[in-house]
Amino acid sequence: MTEKKNMKDDEYGVLLYYKYTDIPNIDDLFRFYNSNCNSLSLIGRVRLAPHGVNVTIGGKLSALEEHIAVMSKNQLFEGTDFKLATCSEPINDKVAEECGFTTLSIRIVKDLVTLSSNPLSKPPDISNSGKHLSAVEFHSVLQNAGKSVTDASKKLVLLDARNLYETRIGKFHAPNVETLDPEIRQYSDLPSWLDTHSDKLRGNQILMYCTGGIRCEMASAYIKSKGPGFENVFQLYGGIQRYMEQFPEGGYFKGKNFVFDHRVSVGSSNANVLGNCLICSFPFDDYSSRIRCSYCRMLVLVCNECQGKNLYVCELCQKYGKLVESEPLSIQTKGSKKLRILCLHGFRQNASSFKGRTASLAKKLKNLVEFVYIDAPHQLQFIYQNKEIGDLSSRRPISPPYKQCNRKFAWFVDPDTDENTSSDWEAAHVPFDSLQYQKQTAGFDKSLAYLKEIVSDNGPFDGILGFSQGAAMAACVAAQQMSLKGEIDFRFVILCSGFSVNLQQYEKNPIKCPSLHIYGSDHGKDTQIAFDASRSLASLFDEGCSVIVEHDCGHIIPTRSPYLDTIKDFLQRFL
Image (cartoon, rainbow, N blue to C red):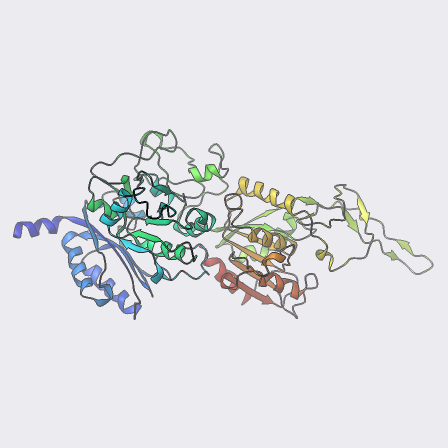
């Protein structure tokens, strides 16, 4: 008996568990975890939220069992599935450090898992998650797929709730069952995929799985929240880990299970190599080198022989236009990430002038964002106001300016005006009209096609900032965010002194893109764009994911407090 205990003292292990429950005093729980884990010399990640905990910790097996014993006595953790596995101690410092397995990290967070990239959206009701199936029940459903004829209209579909790099080394495969792999970079991209492919789920029996179960809890609740046709949602309780414990030879799971600790992946006793090297396509499934895509930073598989190259481009970036031979615009490293924001100037402006106008804003946000400025595609004619000068006896018209000026551009143009690319000055036929923007409604298709090219060549971008007519363009793009997926990907828009162009259909169906609206108040001295026009545009966006800043600074983007503080707060939610 003593010899067995000594063996346990020497053995190392990893413990995973989560629990959705209301935490009455999160600060007390924080102090408890800090005291308990440190006293037992445990390392790893502990995440605490008002609605539960998510824990991945490692240490001596005996210490982990003692931790489980203590937690099991707490009523908050009644019914918790503690998944404990023996393994070797972390030996690769690089892998252990990246996975958070060199120290103990305890943090209080808003959400245990981030389902949506929109930090302002309300998460689904977790109490409405899918029905739990044990590993044996899950296996039985797959085994009997296609045999039952009681309800042939309800097809069984298998949905993988994990990221692409996880599914590339292991996944479930069963005869007569359609497997849906969303091929997402990160979990927060899943709702967008579910919205776009809801026709593949509606009316079917949906069988979900992930690593340990927590991602399925939130994702299944999101699917069921869609209403009629999405009621039959089931999830593998305990995830792939519990399934592989029940079926050591793999069962219907092929390959290896990617895990978020120093083990990197766990295979069955009969684990085939499903993955392939990104460079040479040779069978390979080891992520220990921690090589990432030079553009999006997603993990990629690169075999030992192909390592050492300067540039790696994941299959998603290649799919959306990134060339393996080209150099990325900006390679982000850990700790230096900034939000890349595409900036759309106003009517009769250009990238250079807008960069100058926003220099103060860029300087004050330099630690948060990188602004990328572009010219709009519609080139405008040089015009000047031909007013006569002098007294009545000697009145004469003003001559065109002598100086050379940079070209001016637009996102929308007057449908009754021909596009003139001449470099000659032309006298305006009518006096300046402060409401001219209301007539500029044509040219969207050309501008949209142009933006697709810009994003393909210079992306990815986290957000789009538009000023005046640029804001009108950004709003139109935001309205089509779902249909533009893969061509123009972004997470939010910032609309400054904006107005609406051809968005009448969204008056009853709000635009659900996260948005920050900045415009002059009713007495804000914006003589270019009416207060009501900007406020009307803001009203087209879902109020649950929009922030409004009204200021008194005129036709500009304010850079002083409290306006700047609100801008920073909005941006920091996406970092």
